[in-house]
Image 1: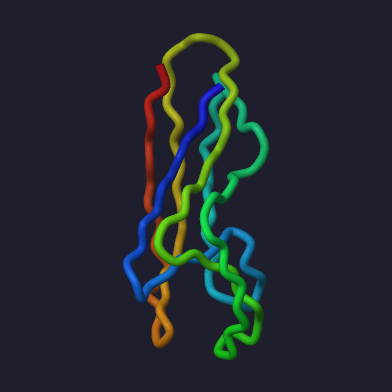
Image 2 (image 1 turned 90 degrees about the vertical axis):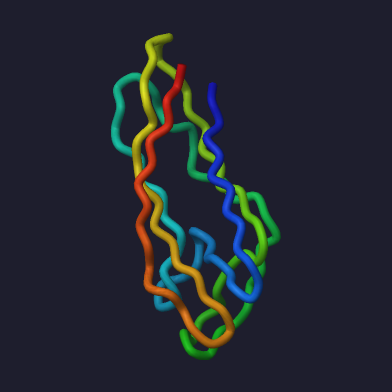
Length: 113
């Protein structure tokens, strides 16, 4: 079993959003993993950080975000001992109290030995 960690550090006054920010709000963080027959994803991506829930009038919903640092964690179960890679992407958005930057998607590839 592996744990893949994506640790995000955002400098004040910026913050990044939870995967569970409701529709109508800012773009939530989203992980997409390419299918790979050599492993399976165990559960959903977990969030470990100080989650803040706040009503933002500009969106008209209660948003969920992280100031400072958050660790996104995905467990992976190997089906055999072959070397492989975890490939995917993460889409995220950062805002401060006055503006938001456009959503960004970053690709990633991690070797598993």
